[in-house]
Image (tube, rainbow over all chains, first blue to last red; front, side, top):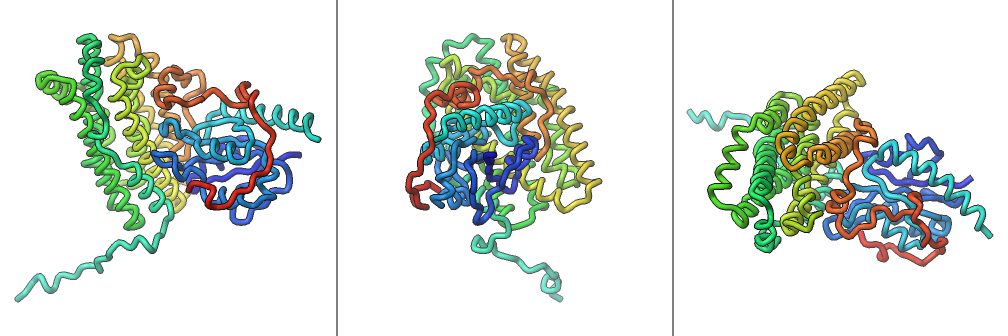
Amino acid sequence: MSGLIYFSSATNNTQRFVERLGLPATRIVKNTVATVPYVLIVPSYSDGEGRGAVAKPVIHFLNDPSNRALIRGVIGTGNLNFGIYFAQAGKIIAAKCQVPLLYKFELSGTDVDVARVRQGLDKFWTQQRSIAP
Amino acid sequence: MNVQATVRRPVTRAINWNRIQDETDLTVWNRLTSNFWLPEKVPLSNDIPSWQTLTAHERQLTIRVFTGLTMLDTVQASVGAVAMMPDVQSQHEEAVLTNIAFMESVHARSYSSIFSTLCSTQEIDEAFRWSEENVHLQKKANLILNEYQANDPLRRKVASVFLESFMFYSGFYLPMHWSSRAKLTNTADLIRLIIRDEAVHGYYVGYKLQRALEKVSETERQAVKDFAFSLMFELYEVEEAYTEELYDGVGLTEDVKKFLHYNANKALMNLGYEPLFPATATDVNPAILAALSPNSDENHDFFSGSGSSYVIGKAVATEDEDWDF
């Protein structure tokens, strides 16, 4: 069984998305530890220049090498109103951790987003298992 | 006898940004101030040749759309943000609202910069007269102003988020459409700055509504939600009529409506509610989405079937300072 870890701020947009997804998932709080390979769902908080996109609790979580070693992919959320910086946190983490940016969606996601992520994760983990050493 | 000396006032408190009750106030303040801009930053005059390629009808449509947007910005600056101030939970929230009010004034002022760059005085005056006489536009304003002036802090926040995250978009569509045709591209740059600000405003007030709803009974929460959906229906009806009147002549009405549905869903999400319009009604023209987010790769991701270039994760040493925050 592989994992799903997410961050959600006080607006709970990502929290609501994960609830509708209906998959077991862990919300990042202080000292969250990853124990199995996981996909990370992260909202973005960048300013007009793309700065400050990754939330601090996510940074602290990923600064732990053992947490970072288990990340397999990232799903970025945000608002297309931010133009080129839409889902910027997802893009930054994908580049830093050298994992694929699997998907992007806005705010708490639509039913289509929920279906695509559910299906996509299933396919992704099947592929991961087939290439795992 | 000195009457004034006997008047008792509550203690006047100075705002202390080193004692924060709600971290989101500080985060949003920082976002809004770092995003600050003025219309002078955008070289609007580069759009003059492009403006001259539009037909007389297209020019009139554009000026009217921008006048409608100016009116909504005026409402938000002078009434909306101010009406929410008595409801604040902290002095920092009040400070954020003063920023929102001022930026709405900057937005309203920006349209006049566009007008003075591109249009004649006669065209401008005609459009402002039109905005005062157009029944749909006036109804839009009235529906929102009724809520701002009623004495219900929760409903006021709903109305504010709908204005910021939904009602502007029948207007924002047009500069995005021109931009997708490589027309008025500097104007589109300015509109994108406004669109970015409105996203933060809708997010913030929506967040404050969610906080406020935590403090009321389940019955009241349900009543606010029912109110929000019924106001959305009412506003949508007016937006539909407004859209038809403006865009029928250029054959864009159906395209604009999809953009309205898409943004109505986002407005509801900002309030913490589920989307209303199904996927079949929100398939916005990709050219409009691309104009919103230029140089992006919106369709390039693994789940959509284009993830051939992905690499297997490997650990790279990172420390706090490696991350830009």
